[in-house]
Image 1 (cartoon, rainbow over the protein chains, first blue to last red):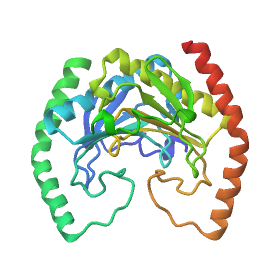
Image 2: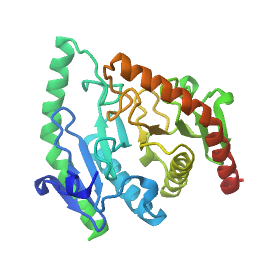
Image 3: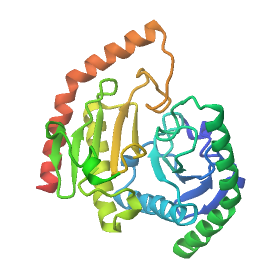
Length: 150
Length: 150
């Protein structure tokens, strides 16, 4: 994929929570998984092993800062961290808070799982309550990254 | 999950490629995705942010060494790196080589995708050719980790 065709090279700036020196932290705005923050390396690089050791340490540093702040403010049952890039081969990391009553738990969010009507209602109610707590998490994350990287 | 019930605390030793000071590198022995190496932290720890910064750097260091050796010897179309742990909340990392003709590409391996008979045949043929090259990758990985960590 050429940088000119890459959606992560031409990102919707309204989703950006914090612009670091070498990466952006964005709200993934996933309708099903609200606690979903994405860290995107600025440069159009395909794999983590294309970065230098120092660049990898910088990038993983912020990934785990995001994880820590998400745990502190949203207390998910589990955190999922992944860098796949099969569709968009431009290094980016997903940090996803998971709960026992989300639609695919304990499977990956990319799996499919049939939910009963009761389970769907519980997932929707949980998602609604989570959405109310999201601004507090985002504010805390922005403040924290500001303190570390500004 | 109690360590006594944790499958990663009582691992089948025959899958171990290399035992590092704080982690194991194992062949995931996935029947569908042969280029699948897993790095498992020795201690029963739930999240990456439960490790110290130094421990995280150590663990991610080997994850990306695995990625580099896998690229060098198997040349996948893309590498997927993920730490989920929803089913087994004991820190471990998946490093998965992906090819355009594997059964779920470009989706995550945890997704489901209907394949035509032709696609299934191509995936099976590719898997077979990959299985023949796997010992070379495993040998190179073991030698490389031996050089770094012994």
